[in-house]
Length: 386
Image (cartoon, rainbow, N blue to C red; front, side, top):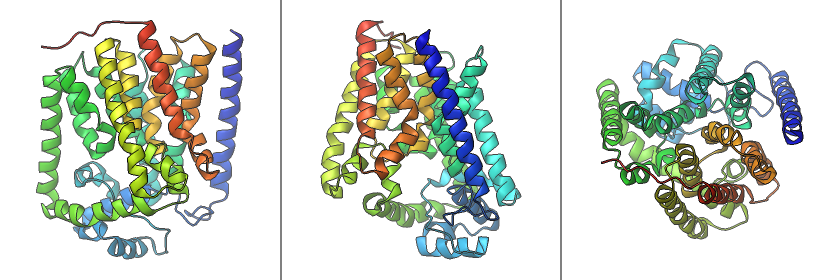
């Protein structure tokens, strides 16, 4: 009971700080630009600009970085800090309706729709006010709102797929098919689905992804894929391996923690490789040892963040529903402390990164270790699908 009161107090303090930060951030804006020269919604610039380019039939302007910079300058009438397009082209049909709005209304629609879909897909039917607030006001959600990112949408896709995998496998597959717009979040889903022989989910996911690709080619022409492969991917690889500063601070991955301490990209890959292999082994061990769907979902998501070299703090929105579900069945102070550390990681990762402390990846490893302990203490044999 005392622990719960402390948690409530800590959450109340966090909510106040978050509200104060948002108010200060908005108060420091001039027009639609914030104090750093970025537009409010920052990364949403890419979504809205691509939607505008698609509606005008000029998608060739978003893939080449220099052409894209000129396009953004013409679109907004000001020089913006560097932006680049990094998403697979089959996201375009999903964001096309944004072109019907000017920038600020489009950002509002994007943010509110994302939050609503996320809450609908992630909260339980009998969720109380505290759970809804914890989902909506979690650090990962705050980062998404500030950056105008797609974490609410991708979290809804991932969580829907994992939670529907037994009850409605075809719907789970559809969710996973849509998640291919951010393939690094689904990097370990093939391991999970193949191990459990979820053939319906696999078939549904492949069909959904195939339809999205076909629709994109039909609407915008197959050249959008060649433009993405030949221009956008190489530049994104350059950004990933060479860019520093706050960019590195926003990734809680082994690769980026290694770069944070001064290792070059080649050495950082040598750090990431065993992390990826270990994450795959951890997930397989988890699937062998338990059939507890909550622990499997938590383990799959934790393993994804350990295995992938390229994930940002706003992608951690997908962890929030897992943390809330685990909190309700955890009584130990140590367990709740670990869950709290992971819950706060989207903000603490940035702060630690800016301070040059490469500890965010270690928090994820600690979470995986704690999950392994829960599996050992609560064994439940898996039921493999024929």
